[in-house]
Image (cartoon, rainbow over the protein chains, first blue to last red):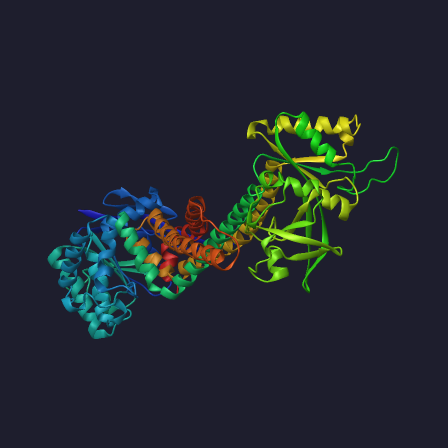
Length: 231
Length: 407
């Protein structure tokens, strides 16, 4: 079943008088349960694509369907609603609230969903445990954690709303190779065992190869779309 | 987002930077505190002036000399310069106007007074026995000026308590002692009861002597400087005032009321003119304090804008995980309003302390009205909304992509 469908997406940025084309006629589909890496050098438009896929931005031309719904016509608040209920973000720089505890960071998406406090904490603890964050860390401030722990907390935060799809932007960019491997295997496990659809954005071939499929981007265009040899 | 969660987020954000929150709140505390303090001073001043005026007597009408006008184009002499108001006018008023209960003419002037080496400069007022009732004065010791004193032009004097203190020492027994006014000896027969109050309307520093004595030995004429009239009741004041005016005009043979050589005032006229002064004072003090409140409000805005900039990434993240514009706006607005409301509460306490300190160490009996307190709290909430709205709007409108990239 198709979850994500990009139909001729073009994104143009206008700054003063200069027009920059970040994406040119990008079309592809992603099925439910797929683990896709979008790969390309910096400036290839992969961040722009991630923003559109993550409902943070809308295309200038073309259409983006998420679960069959045309996202280019939604308002800011409607997009926020989709992000809240359907999408989990994992960022390169983690983006945890520095002065908040681990638990509070993971609870945050549920606060905006209006889930009650006890239920919120139960679900957050479950998510944290599932990504291997030990219980004694729950009350630590997030800026006291190591990079690997921070990214696990960030993944728990992405999972806590039980989203249909997880969007990870260079999730290993700030981690050493060994910790990066652990985080990537966690994504693989989530994909395999819980059937989460995952899109991973990276410039690193070694990272991309953890996915089932790699879409290569260069200068805003898809230059290749291949299955990896993994399976 | 639930209300409870909103407050939890607010608490989290405000306690994250305690010293900054404290200083911002302090700005509002000072603003609200000074507004309430100043208004209470103004109202206290008004209250004490009103009670001074009420202490003058009840249902009082006062007639004072006006301009001396000459026929033709002569220069007008100053107000109060007319010499035409006399004791006979006072007698005519009590005789001919039935609405008048009592009259008390007086003539006053300042003299240097000596007694046993001590001396003072004070107001000497020639009065009649009715003065005690009309102007609501009582003697604390000795006796008041009597009808007999008046007839015999006796050289007797009743001293105000302050004057007694100045001449004979604090609370000394002055009855039977002698004072000298313009080299003439007067025997002290009584001491007035203190009316309290200082400055405006103080009636404790003066000497009362019989009117006839004053006119004969000090002034040298039949003129009086004021006629105090007591009307029979509150309702007949206006009519009595009209009748007195008509009577005096005909006695002074003046056909045009515009040219009257006397002024008639009643207590409520004095009260309203004094009130308008204190009202202006209150507004003045209040607006000076209001400026500090506005400065406090700008402090809130400044802090909120700094916070929005500092927390740009956080706002970006919140939006990425599904916060709507209104969620962000509510959050920052609640922070601003919480700051000002806390400031408002402590400001009311500060204002109360200011007014307490002023009643204790100053001479004004301040009063805190419920209205001032409500106004303080209301204004602080409004300031929170007013100065918090723009930063909140700015936070809500942040583009999540740019906010997440913000370093």
